[in-house]
Length: 346
Image 1 (cartoon, rainbow, N blue to C red):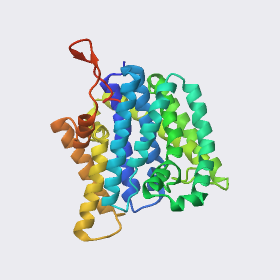
Image 2 (image 1 turned 180 degrees about the horizontal axis):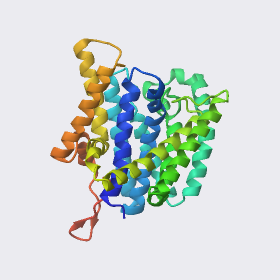
Image 3 (image 1 turned 135 degrees about the horizontal axis):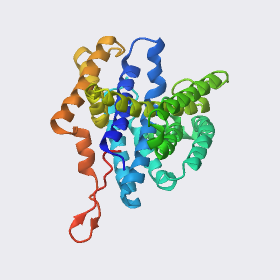
């Protein structure tokens, strides 16, 4: 069984995704600061896949319970994402895309979580087919006459400029396959080799993609970008587990607490980001949000806020809402209810 300490590696990866997201959204500089553009969304997708794999392997929820819980969680992300997007237009809110990913991934995870080789094969095939689907969907003239709700759905599935299910799904399947071997892959010293190998494969995929007409730019959804982003994100997950283990063995684990809290309260963190930026816009009027001042203040509000909420209440308001809306587990025997046990990995 995974202990809560070992799952802290997943919280660290999720927290790093939040910090990377803030840099990608708000940093005014180029150069090395462009790296989060390539990492943020793929890391969220890979972490979703890893979390589902761990939950299915260790918690063993019933298929119906697992599917219902993830459909409910996905729908919450879709609805919340639509509301947040209406509040602030300078950022393309990723939550609806991740919500659709969770809904689609859940039945696949049930079928594939013990079959990592087949999972990787399907992920590779989707990475090749996905760009063709995007191209066909964007070129379909019939969508011009569709109602708005169907256009939104097509955007989330295939035609989104920054995000889309067909790009996220192979990344999440890569995370699902990683979950099978994560115990060994994230254990030092082997973990350093694994993380380094994944990173080298990511660099290779990006380099090869840049030599093709399709390229490998962030958010492009090309085969090279999807493959490179998947390896980049899986390397980051492994490195997160290694970093947690190393810092705690050195007696410096306390420095991780703000990042771990942000990872545990990732949905609250995302919501805080949009609310804070919308408040700034309401106060000072429309302005570009790429500035060091806005980046620094947003990091302080989001990371600091999540740390305080986690220390004081052990959860955040959005995480509480997801649990409050979760269907009750089926009864076991006459007087007991079996716990889902999915919160730590979710």
